Length: 114
Image 1 (tube, rainbow, N blue to C red):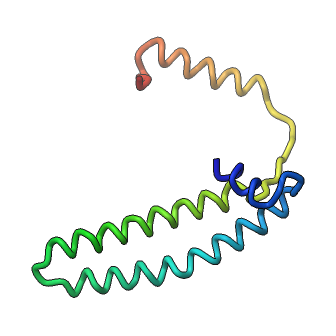
Image 2: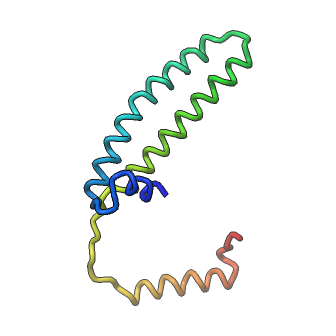
Protein backbone atom coordinates (compact mmCIF):
# COMPACT_ATOMS: atom_id res chain seq x y z
CA UNK A 1 0.00 0.00 0.00
CA UNK A 2 2.76 2.44 0.90
CA UNK A 3 4.66 1.63 -2.31
CA UNK A 4 1.56 2.22 -4.44
CA UNK A 5 0.83 5.56 -2.79
CA UNK A 6 4.42 6.68 -3.23
CA UNK A 7 4.32 5.61 -6.86
CA UNK A 8 1.16 7.61 -7.38
CA UNK A 9 2.79 10.70 -5.92
CA UNK A 10 5.93 10.35 -8.02
CA UNK A 11 4.17 9.46 -11.25
CA UNK A 12 3.38 6.37 -13.23
CA UNK A 13 6.69 6.26 -15.13
CA UNK A 14 9.02 6.91 -12.20
CA UNK A 15 11.59 4.27 -11.41
CA UNK A 16 12.51 2.78 -8.04
CA UNK A 17 15.30 5.32 -7.53
CA UNK A 18 12.87 8.24 -7.87
CA UNK A 19 10.43 6.60 -5.49
CA UNK A 20 13.25 6.08 -3.01
CA UNK A 21 14.28 9.73 -3.22
CA UNK A 22 10.73 10.93 -2.66
CA UNK A 23 10.28 8.52 0.24
CA UNK A 24 13.48 9.72 1.88
CA UNK A 25 12.42 13.35 1.48
CA UNK A 26 8.96 12.64 2.92
CA UNK A 27 10.44 10.72 5.84
CA UNK A 28 12.97 13.44 6.59
CA UNK A 29 10.34 16.16 6.35
CA UNK A 30 8.01 14.39 8.76
CA UNK A 31 10.35 12.59 11.15
CA UNK A 32 12.08 15.70 12.53
CA UNK A 33 8.84 17.50 13.52
CA UNK A 34 7.46 14.26 14.94
CA UNK A 35 10.50 13.94 17.21
CA UNK A 36 9.95 17.47 18.47
CA UNK A 37 6.24 16.90 19.05
CA UNK A 38 6.93 13.67 20.90
CA UNK A 39 9.54 15.27 23.13
CA UNK A 40 7.19 18.15 23.96
CA UNK A 41 4.35 15.78 24.79
CA UNK A 42 6.60 13.72 27.04
CA UNK A 43 7.73 16.82 28.94
CA UNK A 44 4.13 17.98 29.32
CA UNK A 45 3.03 14.52 30.45
CA UNK A 46 5.76 14.38 33.08
CA UNK A 47 4.75 17.85 34.36
CA UNK A 48 1.12 16.90 34.91
CA UNK A 49 0.25 16.33 38.56
CA UNK A 50 -3.26 14.93 38.98
CA UNK A 51 -4.79 15.80 35.66
CA UNK A 52 -5.51 12.29 34.46
CA UNK A 53 -7.55 13.52 31.51
CA UNK A 54 -4.71 15.70 30.24
CA UNK A 55 -2.28 12.84 30.78
CA UNK A 56 -4.50 10.53 28.73
CA UNK A 57 -4.48 12.92 25.77
CA UNK A 58 -0.75 13.50 25.99
CA UNK A 59 -0.13 9.76 26.05
CA UNK A 60 -2.35 9.42 22.98
CA UNK A 61 -0.21 12.02 21.20
CA UNK A 62 2.92 10.06 22.06
CA UNK A 63 1.35 6.81 20.84
CA UNK A 64 0.29 8.39 17.54
CA UNK A 65 3.69 9.92 16.96
CA UNK A 66 5.26 6.51 17.56
CA UNK A 67 2.80 4.97 15.09
CA UNK A 68 3.69 7.54 12.45
CA UNK A 69 7.36 6.84 13.05
CA UNK A 70 6.76 3.13 12.42
CA UNK A 71 4.85 4.01 9.25
CA UNK A 72 7.76 6.08 8.01
CA UNK A 73 10.15 3.23 8.71
CA UNK A 74 7.88 0.94 6.71
CA UNK A 75 7.82 3.45 3.87
CA UNK A 76 11.59 3.60 3.72
CA UNK A 77 11.92 -0.18 3.99
CA UNK A 78 9.48 -0.68 1.10
CA UNK A 79 11.63 1.29 -1.34
CA UNK A 80 15.09 0.38 -0.06
CA UNK A 81 16.98 -1.51 -2.74
CA UNK A 82 18.07 -5.04 -1.97
CA UNK A 83 20.80 -7.17 -3.46
CA UNK A 84 19.89 -10.63 -4.63
CA UNK A 85 22.75 -13.07 -4.18
CA UNK A 86 22.52 -16.27 -6.18
CA UNK A 87 24.73 -19.22 -5.43
CA UNK A 88 24.87 -22.97 -5.24
CA UNK A 89 22.51 -24.68 -2.81
CA UNK A 90 22.83 -28.15 -1.35
CA UNK A 91 19.34 -29.42 -2.22
CA UNK A 92 20.05 -32.76 -0.55
CA UNK A 93 20.79 -30.93 2.69
CA UNK A 94 17.67 -28.79 2.37
CA UNK A 95 15.50 -31.86 1.76
CA UNK A 96 17.13 -33.78 4.64
CA UNK A 97 16.43 -30.84 6.96
CA UNK A 98 12.83 -30.53 5.75
CA UNK A 99 12.12 -34.24 6.04
CA UNK A 100 13.75 -34.34 9.47
CA UNK A 101 11.45 -31.57 10.67
CA UNK A 102 8.43 -33.31 9.13
CA UNK A 103 9.37 -36.52 10.96
CA UNK A 104 9.66 -34.60 14.23
CA UNK A 105 6.21 -33.07 13.65
CA UNK A 106 4.67 -36.47 12.89
CA UNK A 107 6.22 -38.08 15.97
CA UNK A 108 5.11 -35.20 18.18
CA UNK A 109 8.58 -33.84 18.92
CA UNK A 110 7.51 -30.54 17.34
CA UNK A 111 4.03 -29.05 17.72
CA UNK A 112 2.68 -26.69 15.07
CA UNK A 113 0.62 -23.66 16.05
CA UNK A 114 -2.84 -23.19 14.56
